[in-house]
Image (cartoon, rainbow, N blue to C red):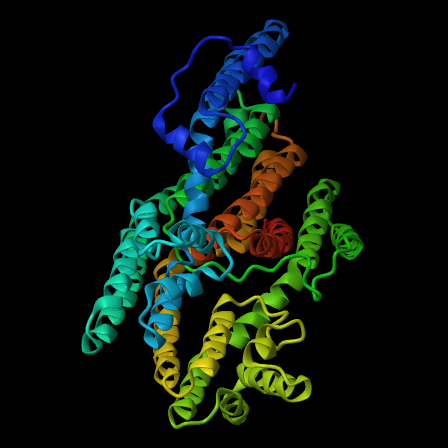
Amino acid sequence: MSPLERLTRLYPWAVSPDDDLVRALAYLDAEADAETAVRAGYGLALLVALLGVPALAVAPTRARPPALAGLLAVALGAVHAAERGPVALATARRTAALGAAPALVARLVLRMRIEPASERAAAFAADADGELADSLRDHVRRAAGTPRSGLAAFGATWADWNPPLRRSVLLVVAAADAPAGERNRTLDRAMDAVLDGNRDRMAAFADSVRGPTTGVYAFGVLLPLALVAVLPAARIAGVPVSIPVLVAVYDLLLPAALVAAGAWLLVRRPAAFPPPRVSRDHPDVPDRNWPAIAVGGLAGLLALGATVPLPAWTRWLAVPGAALGAALVARYRPVKLVRDDARRVEANLTDALYLVGRRVSDGAAVESAVADSAPEVAGRTGETLAEAAGVQRRLRVGVREAFLGEHGALADVPSPQARTVAALLALAAREGRPAGRAVVSMADHVDDLRRVEREARRELASVTGTLRNTAAIFGPLVGGATVALADGMASGALGEPFPTAPLGLAVGGYVLVLAAILTALATGLERGFDRSLVGYRVGLALVCAVGSFLAGFAGAGLAA
């Protein structure tokens, strides 16, 4: 019997799950149905209550009210997570999938410019990676043998989540039957519809997110750090502030509230442009864990040496924080390097397409156009064209194999955009001279895609920049200085002082957790929640936060 089934047996009564939960579990292909999920949530709440009541009975009288509040929060949180957790997860998956909508529409439009057949355009667009392409491929398969292409049904499936996508695919379908003079204008409108939709949704989200992120910054960072300075005075004045209460508030409740607020914001983030996916199967990404462990150990030793002149309690923060941060950086840096290389390949695709397309329009073969254009294209993009031309010459293969084959120039480059360009060039090699204008048109579409992506990130730059700087530098710096000043206040005041070591550990732990949470939130808002990118940036933030906290503590101590 699975743990989920055991929890449902604790709550045998009937429940009535809402339709959103039913749809979410169906979309996630979950094994459990909605009723089982809700009953498991109630069962977990009862289990928490059964285990917590005896603990409350033996707890000190003063500790019972906060312990009871925590117990109720955990029980209600279990119920809420069971009812809304799958819905949030399904929403996040849909949002991530829809990030590929502009690229998919671009594939449809470009295939239609070569041949106005919506069935072939749908099949061409579906020949890609990602959940959105999988959905289109499923609709194309269902429409096989019928007069339909599957595009209209595909658009209807995603209409509630991205209306511009449905409008775009319907325009592509309409372009197949449009007169030749109107076809290009209809296809341009299809591309504009999905790009304008992404632009408007990101702009609206950026406007709506400023208020909540300001609240997170004020009540999750500034106010808690400001209160640290008055804790010694509050203790001396008789306010019952104990170390357990401080740890519970700063290291449990505040981080939990920040995680909840961050999840609420990220789930509402509209689809944008996801980073290239890099798997552990990539040849440039090692599958060994010991290098990251070794780097983390070395960073921990360096942090231990840096804390020698400081109080002993600082090493309990510096060593694990620096070790974990450095290990994360070492673990995900190879992925970052592969992704950076993919971005460099994409950097001058517009020039490459324009030059190749012009030569094909003038009657040159795609193979020779690629070779002749390579020296004229700057950077890594030109090197990729030259490499593909070399593969063609040495192995005597076609354009597709030269770019996308086992030994192709893009075999180890995880760039959906570059792969779409290669697939179009391979198609142009079959179609010949008429495809040259479509290749040139794609240069404009690639430029439009990149411009909308830059605008989307620019909309969020002010918000995410503040969060990142606060997480890695300003928050830990203020936290360290505040602990040092609080120590000075306690040593110079009358009455029972507030011990510096527990205060420093509680606040230091809070600022390190804060660095991880705010960095993950900023990265997710800006580029989508990609595990490797978040891990790399969180690692950097933790290393910087350790240094900033120690610098703030040492500097304020000297000044005092």
